[in-house]
Image (cartoon, rainbow, N blue to C red; front, side):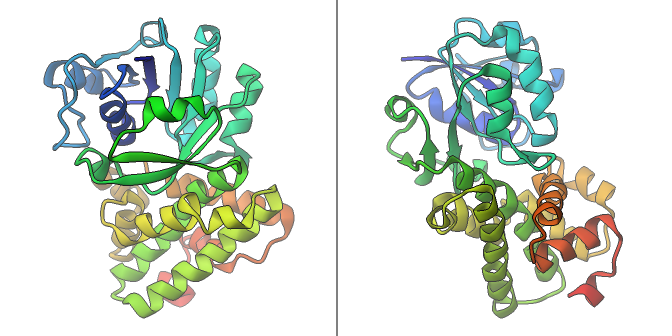
Length: 307
């Protein structure tokens, strides 16, 4: 039994706390007092009404309290706050294993690089099709894992399996950019396009993810695996995906601010778009689907004319 500190109290952070507490001691850090109080008093996550957390799980507002006596640190804060989070916890990190569970990038940089810059160590990585809403229902879930193989037995259980993958780059690119394609799928669905069109869109979207991954040094087979195609299908086909829901609302005429308020959680696809756009321009890549979604979101281009 290990002491695991989860940095981030959103839906995925709480779902991982639920998973890992089956075999370990778990603490959570939260940025918001309201979320911490809800976890400590109600033993639930604000974003997951069906989740009942182990009463031994405690949530803290101070990093020092959340990280004390930890063997393993799991980082699952939103990508836009990731760099600052690493800088803020640096003085509390010693010999703990670090696991990257956030799906995203920062200014075109892989999040694993930010961990290496701050802690002088390579992180382990969890990435794959894993909606929090299904994890907490103990629906069988299979994801990729990179890094310290000794952690696999500590973290997995009968309903949550970690499949080892040695390609940390491809895993991160697939996990981040699939949210962009999910936004686009939501737009199409919101405009009443059906599976003929959406299947084409997913296929071409996967090709664009592959182009970017290849440029960064990722392996092609990873993009066709769990943390690529697997994660892409999950987020494009399920209404558990906040990115897909955001796309549907966008097609219905909602503004980005209205969508953020209605979805109520971080929409990682919006930040992923900015990162992908940086990389597309840097490497002069032909990724017209991603560019068009960027124009819809950030340049206020007419959705129907672009489609």
